[in-house]
Amino acid sequence: MSTIIQSLKQLHAQIQQAETCYQRQSDSVLLLAVSKSKPASMITTAYQAGQRHFGENYLQEALSKQQALGAFDITWHFIGPIQSNKTKAIASHFDWVHSVDNLKIARRLSEQRPQYLAPLNICLQVNISDEASKSGLRLNELAELCEQVAMLPNIKLRGVMAIPAPSFSFEQQCQPYKVLYQAVKKLNKPELDTFSFGMSDDLNAAIAEGSTIVRIGTALFGAR
Ligand SMILES: *Cc1c(COP(=O)(O)O)cnc(C)c1O
Image (tube, rainbow, N blue to C red; front, side, top):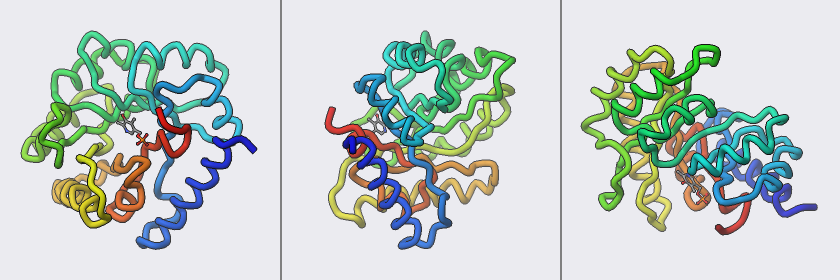
């Protein structure tokens, strides 16, 4: 059996086990396959094994794969940094964007979302522990940006995304997710139902702390 198919099975088993272990509802965590820097043929293999949600970081690379895989019923997620000159194509070619961290980008995505498509699903990327990273808004900006983004017409604010600084104990991995999860719950907005938390190295901690989408690259497609 192909490594990708095997890894997919292992990941589903790991997610299921974590859901049970941390008293999460079964099937409450979606596996997003992060295919950046991997060829369309690998996406095809995962697709044929049942995977439907794929995440990409780089627009041009994503567009060429989407063109190659046009016949497939894939839900595409944009998870990389967003330059304003790319918003039009992102708004037209993706179903989800996880990496919105300012109002200007959110406004452009809303204005440029084609009317014939459903509203674009948006997560706000919050910089919760990685001081070195330029991406992501600060936690103290979250409430205001949520209010502003929620009013835009062609996007649907779904929740938050975080990429914490790497840490190696389970407790340390949990900490930033716990803080962000509680901050979102305090906003008391039931429509914020999405926590895009967790990558290959910290998915158990992320699921323990409320993740609803884990973004997995390496553990599925191998090292980049
Ligand atoms: C690359 C990437 C991932 C996947 O990371 P792995 O450690 O390979 O699982 C997840 N989220 C974002 C935003 C990424 O850029």
